[in-house]
Amino acid sequence: MASVRIREAKGGDCGDILRLIRELAEFENLSDQVKISEEALRADGFGENPFYHCLVAEILPASGELLGPCVVGYGIYYFIYSTWKGRTIYLEDIYVMPEYRGQGIGSKIIKKVAEVSLDKGCSQFR
Image (cartoon, rainbow, N blue to C red; front, side):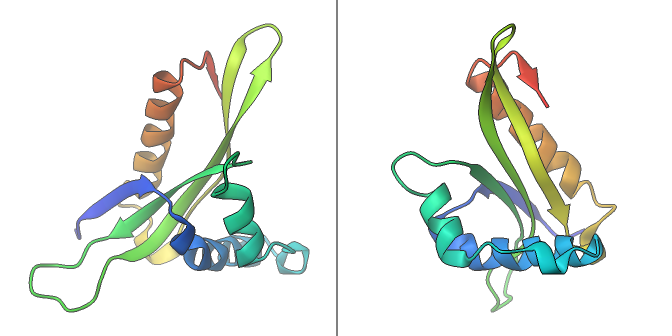
């Protein structure tokens, strides 16, 4: 299996994130409902007060390969507040390209969001 890295997304990843959002929508037969743009993703997730946070899964090139890392999955999450439980993290979307499924990439994304939840003192992960 190729080496996989789960990392926080950067503004420069918005093109890849949008590509994967469109793949997910196509899989769900809801392509016509995707109205978000790369610019909106960048503004909403990478400004001073982001509305969402995102992790990306990258396949890292083998030693000696000329190609750079390839983004093959993502997880979008945000924080909400429960009046009964307090801080909560909500995983909105998780997607891994079909050809990379079955390798534990989705599980790694979920685990990383859980780590963020613990680090931020959240009482719930939804």
